[in-house]
Image (cartoon, rainbow, N blue to C red; front, top):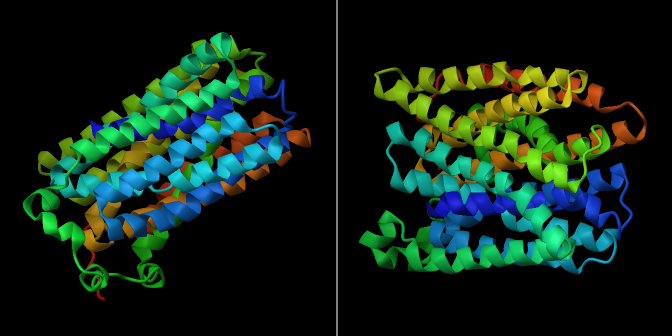
Length: 400
C-alpha cells in the first residue's frame, strides 16, 4: 500500500506539466521542440538517478533511501510553480527527474524483501498499478485546480502530497530484516560495501545488457505516450483543458488494469506448475503483441483513438510489470537495486532520445502519424531482444 501510493504520487507529479501545458503556455511560450526538451531534461536526470538511485537504495536500505528520494522530488515538483520562464521550468524538471529516479529501484527492492518468487509479479503488478492511479487522478484534478486557482498551485499541491507521504513512510515502513535486526541498518561501512559490485561488472552479464536495451526501446514508446498524449489531444484533436480532464484518464485506467492482469497472470501460471521462464515470457510476448495497434491512432475517430490508447497503455504496463520483476528473478539481493537501476537508466534514456526526435519530427511538419508508426514497433523489437539475450529466466550466479 505504501509503495503503491508512492508510485501513484510519482506519476501524478510527472503528469503535472503535460496536463497543465495549455494553461502554462498562456504565461510562458513553449514550442513543441521546447516541450520535448523539458521532457528530455526530466528523463535524462531520471536516467542518471535511476542508475545511481539503485546503488543508493542498496547502500542506504529501502526505508531510508525511499524517504530521501521522496522528499527531494516533492520539493522539486513544487518548485515548478515558481517558474517565470522556460529555463526555470527546465531546471525544475531536471530536479524532479533526479528525485523520481530512485522510486522504482526502491519499489523493486521492497518487493524482493517482502514477497517470495511466486508472488512477486502479482505484488509488482499492484505497485505498478499505482502509476495508473496517479495518472488517472492527474487530468481531472489538475483541471479542477487550474479552474479554481491557477496552474502554479498544481505544482504546490502535488509537492505537498509527496511530503505527507514521506511522513507516513517514515512512521510506518520497516523492512523484515530491519524488524528482526534493527542494528543492521547501522552496519559498518566495511560490511555494507563488502558485497558491492561495480557497474561495469554487471554489464558483463548478457541478461543485464538485454534488459537495459529492451527497456530502452519499450520506454521510448511509453514516455512518448505518457508525456505527449495530452498534447496530442490538444494539438491534433482540438481538445481544451476541460476535455482532457474528462477523457485523458481513461487510457491510464486501462494501464492500471494491464499492470494487475499481467502480474496476476504470470504468478498464476507459476503457481499452476509452469516454469518461471514460461510464466514470465508468455506475458511479455502477449503484452508486446498488442502494442502495434497504436499505429492506427491518427486514422480513426476520436472515440476509437481513446480505445487504441487504452489497449496500448494496458499492454505497456503489463509488459513493464514483468520487466521490473525480472531483476528479482535473475539476481541476488545484494545487487537487485543496482540492476533495477541500470534497467531503468536504459528506459529513461530511450525516453530522452525519442522525446527529442518526436519534437523535431512534429515541428518539421512530419506529423503524429509517422511518430506513432515508429513507436508501435518498439515493444515487439524489445521482446525479440529479450528472447535472444535471456534464453532461460533462472537465478544467475554473481561472482565478486
